[in-house]
Amino acid sequence: MKNKIEEARDMINEVDQQMISLFIKRMAAVSMVAEYKAENNLPILDVSREDDIREKNLQILSNKMLESYYNTFFDGILKASKDYQKDLVKMYEDSKKWNNIVF
Figure (cartoon, rainbow, N blue to C red):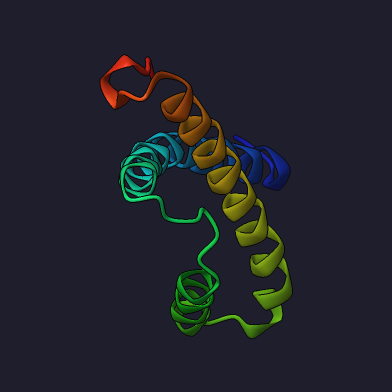
């Protein structure tokens, strides 16, 4: 029989596996956004979009004690997404063809 810490770690491992799958899916969508922005000469940063997403997600968060931790988590997601978009847009600008970019 597992003790509490073993059970908790199993739960964390399971969630981490799910998060990896969701991260890959999210970054695929981010690449689509980067493609659109590159082709339409739009900036990477969209503060109003970020604010909207954050507000919507915070409304879903039932444990208000977790808000600051969620904000830290979300800031990391946004940074990774914007960094990836910047890299993809630069590759696009260097090649001028989106289909030349290998993901």
